[in-house]
Length: 82
Image (cartoon, rainbow, N blue to C red; front, side, top):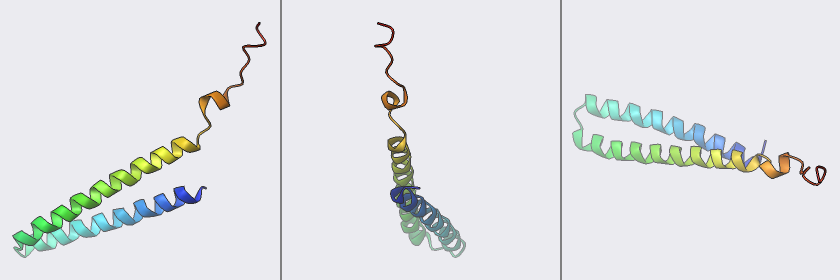
């Protein structure tokens, strides 16, 4: 597997971990009535979610780049029929 792909997959897994932790923090803050802190924590959660989306998009682009080009995958045989 490509090193770039491994790095992105590791980053995705870590970001999911951060998202899960941030959701837990938000729950605890809500339970204890820290409404202003909840707002700040939710902003961070949105940032983490946007980062996850960007990482997933980068992974999709990288996987697409790793695929052989359609022109490379099919032999050019038009000269045979002429």
